[in-house]
Image (cartoon, rainbow, N blue to C red; front, side, top):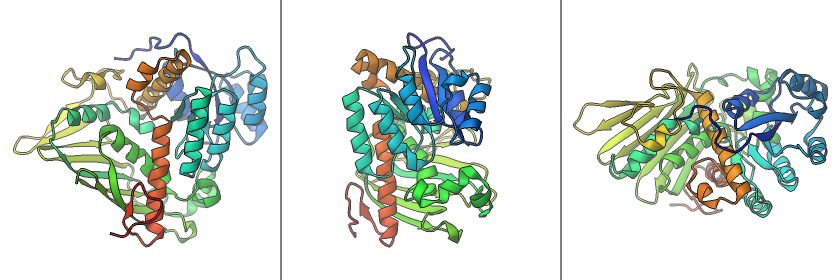
Length: 399
């Protein structure tokens, strides 16, 4: 159980790039990092492309106005002069800026926590991974849903053979908030998401499905995709070539099959985030809308609902429990869990504690690179006529 006691010797001196007043994700980062005030201290930031608005916002967060910078380059240069300069930075900016800012941060000797999708290409991902290794720094990726504890319960039950051999993987992350094009023009946080120059080669595949795909990797670390087929659509024509809806079929190396539906035009849907794993003996199903419940369905037996924080759950699951079974947890606690693990990873890296790093389950640089690989393969399949592609290949392989 987590109760706010320190897990590292002292709070990390932390800064944000982006995540200002008009951003959609900044507050999620802050509640994640600062939920346990023993892990991070927000001491600086370049919060907004508008320098004055960013300074005003930072001051209202309690940051010294002299440490509210007009841009990240100025922040890195000035903070490097201070004995109490920043140690880790979170990047909450549009996709097209992630690579250059991450590279600059690592070169400045900082650990990095970055929004997803991490970068546009596998080459960029491998380059940054090598740079992080040379610098001895951590790069974490904010797959914010992945801190939900019951995902670790699913992982444990699969490892223990509770559902038998995995046969079917059924994934969904959909909503209806982009069912019309209104937000494309009026919402600053939406505008860049449908601009290929800023968002990259995809919209919902990168913005939504990378979350769900990483969660499936977290739950099933030994399941590897062999082939993939993606069919994507732009129902709002002005978004083309970026998709607002996509279907992905998967074949796994062990013979299992999978499907994923991701969409921002699922009209009327408030929360269609679901993971179902079907085994030879039983199935597991988790919904983001009911994050404190896990359905365990054994063939021929009554359906069971497992409840977060109960003592019958695996210790790896309950290690992240915060509020007790009587009280509901959700996305805020999920973000807090991954941010705490980022802090533990950073502290371990600083101390050269490779054993802790080896056993810590969190979305690291490798998870970010796999997200890039996922997008590249989906886009490659769709753009070549929705063909099956070898998941490790750079060219579509017809089946």
